[in-house]
Every structure is written in structure tokens, then in C-alpha cells.
Image (cartoon, rainbow, N blue to C red; front, side, top):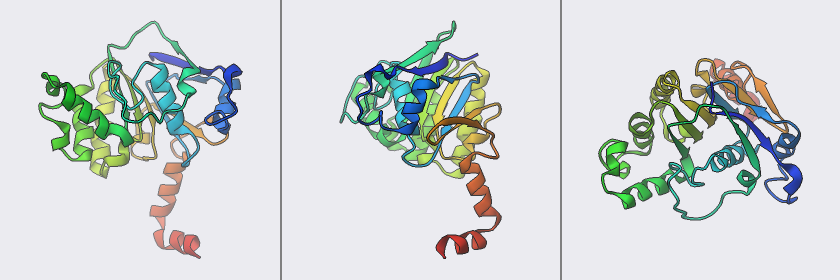
Length: 238
């Protein structure tokens, strides 16, 4: 069961400017995306539009564009696209009890807002300011202490601050939360996170296509490289 079951885009308000110029956005107008599993990954090359799409999903779901919970309403610098205003999310009968939008590039601003709010809010984030933790530790603390069961979690490149061991820790925590009725929608480049059991992997090019773990580009390229780095580098550098 998922909270968000389908993502549709109303193309009637196409501005002919970014992000409507992205091929994936034009594809979405004619091809709604069904979210059938508790974990959905969006993968694709830099500039394909996966972060733009995951940000729009978060905004359409009521989250603050820079990240945080649905009650956060701060803004450091408005850089989000208008795509979220035109997405329609089809919700199931179950409603999430909690949720969070983690956007790696602006998480520093979220931590600063948590510190500004104060008043005991740190108890939900490990008991002290996340600014006192490393970037990766703060991500893990967030998932360990703030994320709970029956939650909707939209994550944009959570691996950005994580070591390999950190990715494994996050993968285990995700598995626990899915077992407690949570849903994840994640844009990622991480072959480790993509191994989440039962996940749907959607690869964004000019279209949105479901792929298997083995054929997902981050997995296939990483496996190819690790299988013969000298051969790979010779081909790449020559």
C-alpha cells in the first residue's frame, strides 16, 4: 500500500519555459506515473530532471520547497520550479502520520531553521543541534530519530553526504520504516540504495521507464568500472 498512488501533470499551463522544456516533463503530460511499491527510486543522468521532479512531488504533497516537514514554511532563496503547482497527486485511502522532504543541497538551511525554532524540537532530531554533527551523521540522525512509521518521505540524493557504510545504514533504516508502513520517493545515484528490496526503479531519460536493478545505469556503470578499472579508464581516457 502507498500513500501517493499516481503522479499526473496538467499540461494546460505549459509556460514554454523551464521546467516545461524538459523532455521528461513533456513525457509526463501524456504518461502518468503509478507508484505501486512502498519505495520508488528516480534515477538518471545529471540534468535529466529527476531532482526537479522529486522537488515538485514534495511541493505538491505540501512540503516546504527547501525541505523539512509540512509545517516548515521558511525560505532562504526561492529556487524551486513551478512544476509542483501543476502536478496532481492521487492519494490512497491511508494517510501518512508524519513525513519529511530531505533535499541534500539545502539541508544546512533546514538545520538552521530547526535551531531557530528551538523549544525542545531538538529532541526529535537526536537531542542536539544537527550542526554539531558531520553532514553525513546529520542525515543518519534525521532518519534514525525524526523519521517514524507510517511516514511519507521524499528524498533528493540522500547519498550526497554518506559514506558507503552510511548508505548501508540508511538502507537498513529504510527497510525498517517500510515494515512500519512508510513510503519513500527518492532521487538517487547510489547503487547501494537502489538495492532496497521490492523497490521500483524509474529511469529518467527523455521518458520515464521502469528498469531492473541490474540494468539501472548507476548499477551497470559502477559494476562495469569495478569489474575492470584499468580497462575502463583506458577506454575513457583514450
